[in-house]
Amino acid sequence: MASGIEIIPELCVRDTAAARAMLTGIFGFAGQGDLLALGEQRIALVQGAGDIGHGGIDHLALAVSDVPAALSALQARGAVLEETTPNGPGHIAEFWDAGIAYVFLRGPEGARIELCSRLPADTRTGLPSHDHIGIPCTDIAASVGFFSGLGFATVHSVSLHRPDGVTEVRFLSAGRSVVELYEPPALRGAKNPFTANSFWRGLRLIGSGLAAGERTGPDGLRLTLI
Image (cartoon, rainbow, N blue to C red):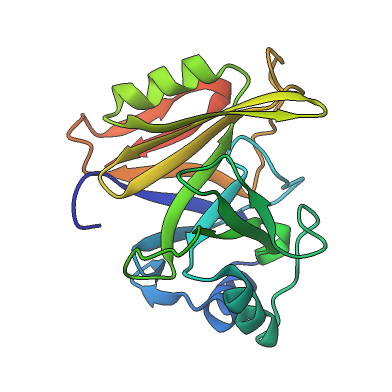
């Protein structure tokens, strides 16, 4: 990252060799020491066992200039649509100035990887690259407060009105690193809804200026400050 905090999500899988092969062969990541990198997004593969699923960190989102074109290219290399968007790209009109296009793909062992682009034309450089880390919340005010204490600032706030209720969404950034915090009706006020054995298990933060060490945020979110 050029400035601010760099977020490195940890992807926990049973078979790290297969995960590395998928991320490099299909998604275009390249080895960078013990990490994998795609543009300004780096990830760390960690080995785990047991009931791994979606949890307190839901997805990694990669910015692309054109979602349908990027999807077509990745599908040609073997990418598979994830159950969140089984029919292909969707659209959220309320995000940013003119909405976004997005689609979810199955990453290693089923971990969610999102492709997204801001409409009408995403002109950000270095694409595909980091867009955001998606983090569901049971209390969005508490989660915003936690990340604000780490040096993040709110850059976009949205209330999504849908048939099942209102989902509150906040995007926070620290330099080029962005987290998307969202509180859907089904999670609002829930107690301990997330398993510790999730695919995207923790976040490494580099450059926060705070003391190094482990921190635990709302909903058991685990961060390692480096």
